[in-house]
Image 1 (cartoon, helix red, strand yellow):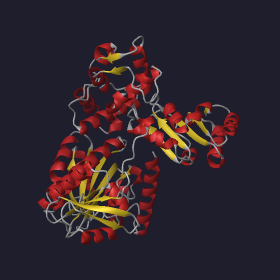
Image 2 (cartoon, rainbow, N blue to C red):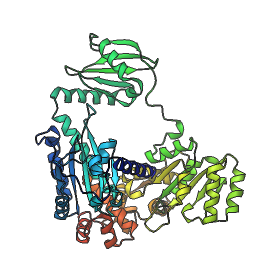
Image 3 (cartoon, helix red, strand yellow):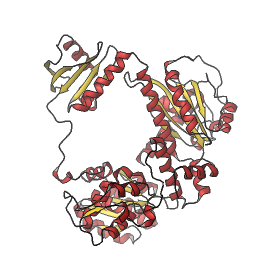
Image 4 (tube, rainbow, N blue to C red):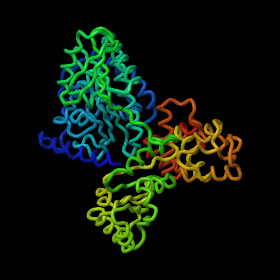
Length: 543
């Protein structure tokens, strides 16, 4: 959600650049051909990926383009003939430049200009001729050199789920990037493999110095400047393998540099400043937390107002309690009450935290009071709101005054975390402390069955289920046979699916949930025909 504000700013800046370039919305696409390389390294790496992407979109009203490092179209892929026809009518074929100064705001031009992924909705294109599709574009960078190699673009009919677009394009970019390395100098690929192996084993900085490139892991990137890299290259040129030397970096940090085994032509270094790159896990975190929950605990120690949105039952209230801190439970109220109640509770909280539930339902007086306290008050406000197809949106001004925006993900998208989430719920039901393991746990067969459930009630549904199953059972293992019949019936188990298929299945489930199982609206939301939706429902065994 916070990224959407940045996305809108990205679109506005692109429109501004388009106007400065002399473009008008009514202009047609500039079809003047430019030079391009039909035998480029990018095309060689991308063609198999684009062919697979086109096959995965078969029957879906979607397609896309591949542009090179100069934003010139060099290839395309389509799932539906109508998209190919539309592209041909526009004239956006191979050899057409889509630089922003020539084509305005679109997924290729703007991703190329900003060097960042971008989603452009139909009405956000600068040229009217392009306002038929939603487009998502992502730049391709060479994993070793870091140079821009091109841009992958996906076009779909208006209303298609943006998450599906992003997942498809990012996967294509990752595959193309991998193939670019594989088709590089073999010694370069070997050096990169050695860098990755060492980075996974050590708890310090790792730097790979090549003849015309430098690669850092995250720790090393924080320590080593470009000037440091040149100095290190000169210092270790004659240093025997496995030997160390002490160096003072430009920042003043004293580090120990050790050479490691690497293919000829590159230098692999361990850079140790004596600090732990991975801090020890506090005792209170001893029982594993999911990444999403760890974010909440980290946010509890930070300042600034927080907005938490999610589907009903997805754990918004519990997330708010974690973010608000231990004292927030005495300052919880609903935004649907009188604004005077809000004033009274905030005043009583002082500089503490106040959780305000259901701010999407707040009336005009409550919205004004919220805005006043968010802008000028001393208390930290943690707001919750429902996010679904038929829920009212949060007031934009109230939203803008929140420093942090969090979305509680639906349970159907957290299948990998199901054992940890269930263990936490069972521990709470048994009255255990955070660092205690519950005596009752889910067995593997139960996890397999529950991972395939669509969870329309999210965490609240899982809590109700485990409460019923655990009733009268203080310890032991919950097996699939202990679950109610409706959970044991075929629910579209996700085992055996590719990552792309798993992502597609999750998006279909989300669309059905948002539109209350209305197949026509769900198909329109996904940008596919109703017959295609029924086909995918059968394939994923979704009942």
